[in-house]
Image (cartoon, rainbow, N blue to C red; front, side, top):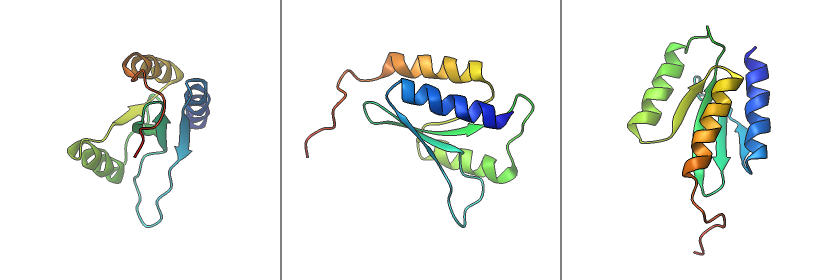
Amino acid sequence: MERDIERYLVRRTIEHGGVAYKFVSPGRVGVADRIVLLPGGVVWFVELKTATGRLSPLQNVFAADMRRMGANYIVLRSKEEVDKWMLNRQSILPTRLTAPKI
């Protein structure tokens, strides 16, 4: 179930030192399920679906908007995909884990 994949994503994100905010945007349908923030300032918009789940037309619009703006966006469909995605994120994280001084 999609709910199980979402819970798994949240747990794995926390294990990797990040947070996975539930994203609800009043007045805007189709936004990603989660905003995942990882160490080093890495931000992803994550949509969660089952293996057979489809993006709605408005979710497709949101995905296209994110890609057009250069934002990190992904659809994950299983716990295995979460693990694979997380492993790839860990290999490209910056070594500096503190926020830059302004």
